[in-house]
Length: 178
Image (cartoon, rainbow, N blue to C red):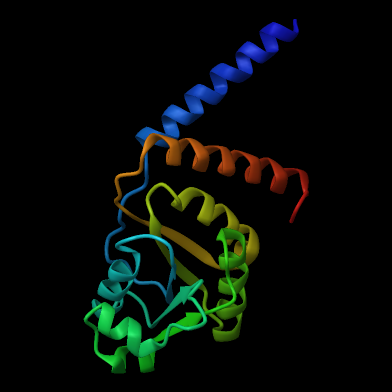
């Protein structure tokens, strides 16, 4: 009996992992939201957020998880963007250190500005867990859409991310670590 249950659990895990790997979310269209949120940590994320902001896909953008020593002018230079765009429309969040605290920092920023819709821009392999955390932090009053930046994640990264996603989903479902 125990072997059968363990076997079924292993099959479910393998099928879930296959689904996770084969259906990584891609970029969204240029639909408009009130805000864009970009967690730091991977190539293409901030570039995508800036391009969407320039295209009028949102009013304002938060880059969450920025190192304390990074100034807006540093990012403007690094991303070939006018400093005026950072001055008017891009906020740097400096409190977050991981996906969960990115969601908490975003929650506070969204509430402060009264936004009702958010586009989350992050790596395709990271999007599901980041959406899970942000949906938990913001609740159902804010519409959140995911925008996956295509990457080339290695197998071990996908393996680790899938397991983090499962553990966090179970923990939130059980009300543990919330």
